[in-house]
Each structure stands twice: as structure tokens, then as C-alpha cells.
Amino acid sequence: MTVQNIVEGKVVVVTGAGGGIGRDIALAMAQHGARVVVNDIGASLHGEGLSGGPAQQVVDEIKALGGKAVANSDSVAEAGSAAKVVEAAVDTFGRIDCVVNNAGILRDSLFHKMSTDEWDAVLKVHLYGAYFISKAAALHFKEQAGGSLIHMTSTSGLIGNLAQANYSAAKLGLTALSKSIALDMQRFNVRSNCIAPFAWSRMISSIPIKDQEQQARVDKIKQMTPAKIAPLAVYLASDDARDVNAQIFTVRNNEIFLMSQPRPVRSVHRSEGWTPESIGAHAIPALRQSFIPLDRSADVFSWDPV
Image 1 (cartoon, rainbow, N blue to C red):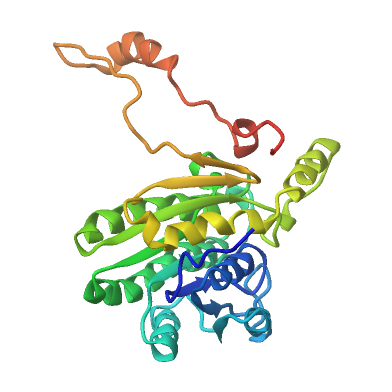
Image 2 (cartoon, rainbow, N blue to C red):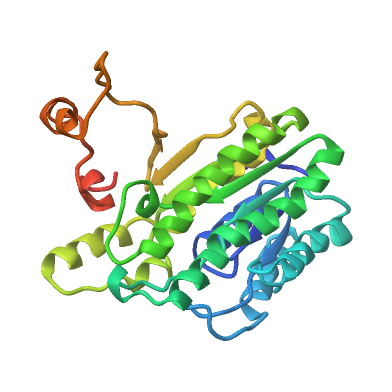
């Protein structure tokens, strides 16, 4: 199969690209003609330790395949250092056309046990990081009248998951950020979309395995490689996706889903208005059949990946 240079000449920043999903997206972007800034601070899954090694290793892989890339190890979690990531693209390649907000850490804990530090650390990388990088890139996108932002969200936020209040809140907040960017910047031909990836990566490897059911779930996830996410990211970075904006996609092995966004489901009306008593007697019984169940991502995506 011949690879088409669908993003030929574009400059793409991929954060958290030292491994997993980010690495495969960076490699695919380069394979399809993009010049890539591979950003990764080289920290552990919990955000500890720093190393420029992972980013440089991916750059070396890209160059070995004939592509163009530069490594960057600035943190996305602070405005100043995030701006340096975008500056690296402009200084090295003269412009910036796309940002893939993929960087992330985990600090899983049941809600009643979660510390403020665990909450802050995850939101700083996932939500604040996406904001800082997107804001820095947006100024260039506005001037050049075009650009693409691709944010990695999660079904943990879109649907729900145990022991991930910080991660879920950040990821659902990211979808709202994406929609707001799309609304505010559509006049400048800037688009903003989200991908919720299912793939075995370092982020997923922290899932606790306490019984056979959890082991079976993890075994299913292991079938889904990070490389399956990359094609959609490359497409969304390309001019072919110029009319795709403010959408949320999920990729699950060979499946691509368009996810719903909150809209009214059912309504009740009472001409004389409501009292707490009439709400309990009439409104809630009428609405209850449309209540969203207390389910998790694994309950909604319950079938084997194809």
C-alpha cells in the first residue's frame, strides 16, 4: 500500500510523544509528510523524573525513516514552558499547523481518598496543559488563517470509570475546551476535535488486576495497539478534514465511533410550575425511564474489539 503524503509540509507538535499513542502518532505524521516536534519530558507515569531520552529516541526513529523531526522536553503543565514547545516548531520549521494534545499522567485514587496534590497534578497536565499549548498555537493559527487542534480525551470522562475523578474531570473538561476553541476560532479556519483512544499503553498498564474479570478486560485492551489511533489523528491534521470541527471520536482497534454530546433527552411541563412535592410525584417518575445508568466505559463498550 502506497503511503500518501496527506500532511506534506505541515508542522505538527505531538505532546507526550516519547512512547505509546503519542509515539505512534508522531511516526505516522512523519510517514505521511509532516515535520514533527516530538515533545516529552521523559517522566514516569506518575509525572516523576525527567529525561530527554524518550523524545530523542522517537526523533531518531523518524530520521532513520527519512523524516524530519526535532525533540523537545519542555513541560506542558506551565504556560511559559508550554509556549516553548510551540516556539520550537516555529524556530525549527518556520511555522506550526497542528497540535496533538496527548501528554498525560495518572494519579488514580478513590474519590474519598484522593489528595489535593493528586487532583492538581492530573489537571495541570491534561487540562491546563492542553489549554497552554493550544493557546500558544492559536496565536499563530490566527495569523496564518488555519490550523488544527487534536485533543486526546477518554471514555473515563465521556462515560465514567472508577478511581479516576481527577482524570475523568480533566478529560471531560477537555471536550468542552475543544468545543469552545472550535466556536471561537472557526472564523480563522481553525478547527478543534477530540479523540478518545482505546489502546494498550503505559497509561492503561496501571489498571489494577484483582480478579479474572479484570484480567479478561486487560487482555482485550492489549489487543488494541497505539498504532490504530494514528490514522485518524493524521487525517484530522490534514486539509482533507477542513470541514470536520468540534467532534468527538473514539477509536477502538478497527472501529471508529462518533460520540454523542450532551443534548436534552426528555422533558416534562407543568403550567402552574413545580413544587418539590410535585417534582417527586410527577416529574421524576416521568423522567426516570430516560435516566443515564451508573455505568462505566467497560459497560458501554462491552463487546470484544474488532
